[in-house]
Length: 376
Image (cartoon, rainbow, N blue to C red; front, side, top):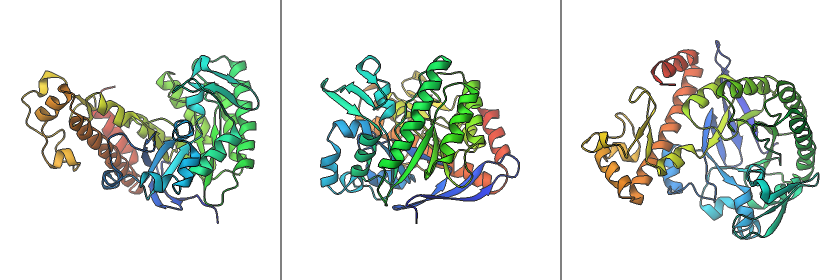
């Protein structure tokens, strides 16, 4: 039996949005889901026990960073990433490709792979499909990602075409290298912002023997309309019986539009990154922008919680906006922790409510209500 399988439970009768179950060696997880990002084998400032209490099921760790420090061999000696970071549920590791390609002048691409300079000490390093997969197998994640090239925006057609074709060849090499029976491997569609390349890439990845299919290279600076168009083209050609993962997306509007287009899984650093910058994510009913900037003077004497009816640690214990504002302005770590806990819980609840609306065939109403209140 495959290590990773996807079970489609229900499709919204109006929109076709999907509700399912992702089956993994470390548990079964309801979709659509949002995966918190634990880049360095930790979700910044949040403990594993807190993550579980927040409702997180699968978290993402970064192969590039763990490859450089502390090294996959050490993590393997510790018994794998689950034991190393004390996390008993699902783990997805990305391939390291996005981070390598974002290094710009510090990396050189060839058919074999990518030679680059470490951002830590400048040491010369090499990543390829084989190196990436072998690293991920040592890490012991539930879901591994094929090594691909994330095409920058903007990119001309010839570059995007050559890059996408190389990603397909690297996908075949990733599959060949993935010999673990206890891990599943997802392929990644690319294609830049070109409809024909997106269609070709989705068809090519869908035809390979991957456990799931991811859509990469989106939300990289392109206009929102182009993002949605390319996503719609990609998901149109992906198999119904496999999980679909949109990489690097985590704002509520993008989550809704991704689910509308058939996506099951999402990840993003957004909720914890903005928390460290003093921002709380809230329902557009609370604030039409969907966010509270806690440094603002509006909250200096505001003794209400971040959001009424929120069951996160910060809100249910009535840590007030005034108090959190004080902590943020004083650069106290506890304030950033409270905001991180709140933001992560907000997104977990948001996904749960979205899933329920799909099961009850009212996803279109859920979406309409959200955007009615949301200030674009």
